[in-house]
Length: 114
Length: 109
Image (tube, helix red, strand yellow):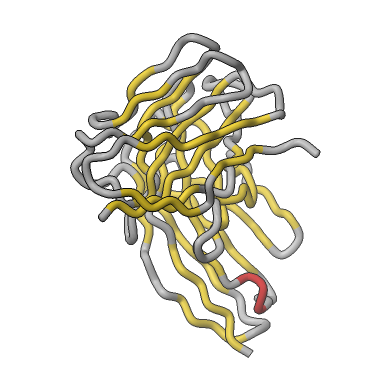
């Protein structure tokens, strides 16, 4: 059963702590993405990766870090430098970044930082 | 100006009604267009791609107007299960997808 998994579904952290969100896909997609969604706003791109061991900053990369050591995995770390980390985080993947490749999303992780 | 703009709604319609959403985009280099559906507290799911000639998938029809830089989604014979937020997405050839904030639809019995 192919798809994208994210864990955990809900995550609670204290301010000042780093936290890592997991994203795994078995669709054999080359490209993977991280977005955050806040109420009343469109999805905003944090980071994306076109191939293993390579990634680029999106529009709101400050306070986040990623790695892409395996094709299937693209974990996101929310660091203590991120000023407003509470949000719904969505991971997506696609065949590639060029042309009309649709993106497919994982179920998301709701992060609450207090 | 936002790159992708949508009327946030909510659109409240009775079952069986026809409802249409529009979306405007600012980047004239945009080449690919999509509608995604997002249920409350869930991930977005691809509803349909939008082709230059317009396309239909059952009760759903999508249209693209490049000259005016807008796309539309028409839903005929609305079902209760169509209640969701509909996200307009545009993409230049080699750039990232740009998402609208969504239009919320509620279909009532």
